[in-house]
Amino acid sequence: MGKARKPKAVKLIIGMLAKSQKLFDIAEEFFIKEFGPIDYKSLVISFGYTDYYKKEMGSPLKRKFISFKKPITPEKIAKIKLLTNSIEERLSADKKRRINIDPGYVSDSKLVLATTKDYFHRIYLNYGIYAEVTLKWRKSSFEPFEWTYPDYRSKVYIDILNSIRNNYMDHVRP
Image (cartoon, rainbow, N blue to C red; front, side, top):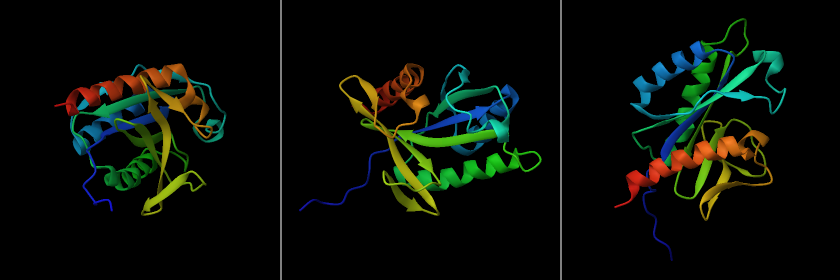
């Protein structure tokens, strides 16, 4: 019989989509107050993988990833998703989002994203939030699943997430 144990701490990441660098900056200020220092910021990347957000947020959209120095325990991701949803709402205009904020975490073996949408490959956490294992670690890089969104399959995103994982691993190794 297995014995229940506390989970290992993980690295909080946040992916943001917006048209304006100013919105990234505003969100980052809030995140620093809430989660502490940022230890990784990606370059701003053009986002052209889908038109899903175009009607609500306009175009062209840009993507940016950040991660935080202080680790979290995995169960906190549900409340963090609620918090990021409230930030999206606060930064909205005319009842339309101007920024999309996707929190998740990186561990030694996976990238997990938090979502409000249920589907066969998502596990309910709490507070109306689900978790999706979006990428798996295999040999020396993250790899997608059949359900992984096209942008998270891209070499650019995988390279960024590999860098974040390497940073995480440098801090958890004895």
